[in-house]
Image 1 (cartoon, one colour):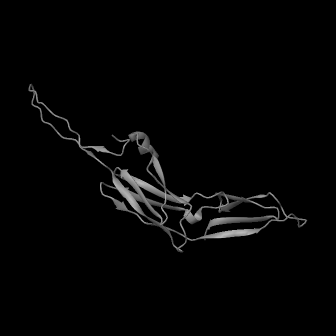
Image 2 (spheres, one colour):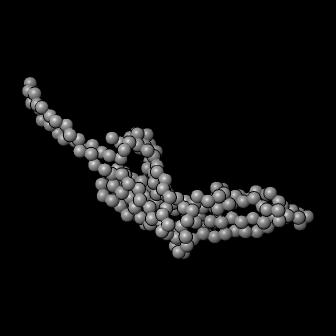
Length: 178
């Protein structure tokens, strides 16, 4: 029934012209497959504060009436399990759930997987991240308290920012390397 992640099994019945055939319908419902695996950081660090979202094409979601995505928290060891996924192509996005000063690169990863009627293991490696810290001062040398800093990568703004403290200090964590 599309919405529950189950699919219908069809049976063909041959009926001759002018005759009647009694048919008992007993649809066979098959559960979808399970997507599972482990998320780990390449530097061996903790995956605390990361969440995993499994989604599929928005157009397909509208066409089939099925949900578009599901978000799961990782267990203490970085494990995840998403059940009842019907055959389709999916995207797995891992990202940080922390505050705005965390740029999320420590948990930013996007993987595509194709599900069939078989369970699929998909381990995900998170690349290392860095920290930017410093002090902002006015031209006169006094701390620039309450100044908002936003990080840009090329011509694109990252979704993270930091506000300077009373000493003009700031800290951006989870900054992607490169």
